[in-house]
Structure formats: structure tokens, C-alpha cells
Length: 212
Image 1: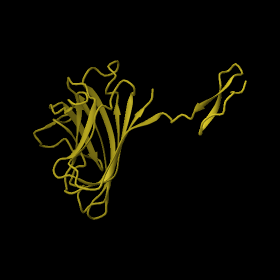
Image 2: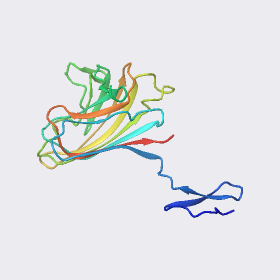
Image 3: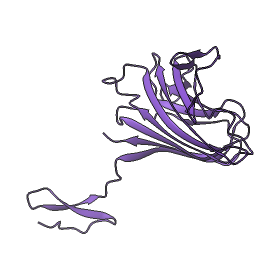
Image 4: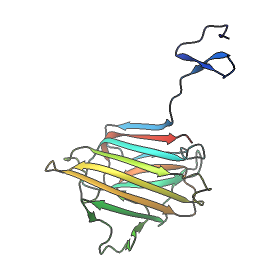
């Protein structure tokens, strides 16, 4: 049975399996864009609040064409709270590990290092001073696993993995991979991106949620 009325634009016909047809919206796919921030002037931080929930099991962050105004590292913190009361989670429960060209970046003499990585109050990437105003843009892809699902992760546990690509002042490619495990007692509802010193001068950060 065909529908009796004309549809609005960009609809398609679907069937219920019993011979009845109807018009429906085209699916937007499994990935849903939750945030999109562009900046082209000195920006101290980029924040996405109230984006983590039980609606999505996996999140993807893509930082593209990002340039900072100093040779520093990208600093990431989770955020908690609801609208009007959001704040960074800055307890010392971020345990992260990074590798660059086979080199372990977090197994040296730093006082924050442990046998399994670095334990500090934020998650850091882009080591060895490979970011900065005179450097090429950096590209970072990050996956965040289940920050709001306590069936897998207990309250206050979040897993990150990432791959980042940079070009240094000599135009040499630099690839870094790593992971972070936040093991605190605070549920994360958002995330913020900063530089350890200085600010972002140009770029775009996109945040997506994956439908179950």
C-alpha cells in the first residue's frame, strides 16, 4: 500500500514487511556529531560540556590542522557536572603512556613516572616540543571508551587511545601513539583541550558519538 500523501523533501520509502509503505528520514549513520569548534585566533582552551552520557558507548575526537603559538604539549582534562556547574577534573588519577618512533616517553627519571606510565592531574600528548607557531599543523585522532556506562567501567573510569601526527621545524614527520586510563571517583560529562603553555592559534576540533 502506497502512502496517500506526498512527502517532504529528502524522504525515502520504507516497508513494514507486511506490504505497507511509508516515507521516512534518511539515517544519519552510526556516528553523530556532538561538537564542532573552529578557531583562528589565540584560544586558551576548547571545551565540550555535557556530551558524555549513556546514549553513546564510544566517542571519537578529531583534531585537524591545529597549530599552537608555542612549542608545548597538548593537555587534556575530563570535565564533570551539569549545565552551569561544569568543572575540570584535575585529581592525580590520569595514568598515561606514550611512544614516539619506538621510544617510551614515560619511563624515564621524571618524578611522575611509574612502571606503567605517568600518573598526573591531566592527560598530555605531543611530546618532544613538536608543536608550535613555526611548526606544521598537527592531526590527532582519539577514541574515548564508555565514560558513562558503568556496566563495563565503574564510576569515574575512562579509557583513551590516540594516534597523532606532527611535523617539526625541519619538516620531518613525527608520529606518536598512546593511551590513558582515568581511574578516579568522578563521572565525566565533558572534556577540555589546552596547551601546557600558550594557546591554540588555528584549527578545528570535532567530537562524535557512536550509536550502540
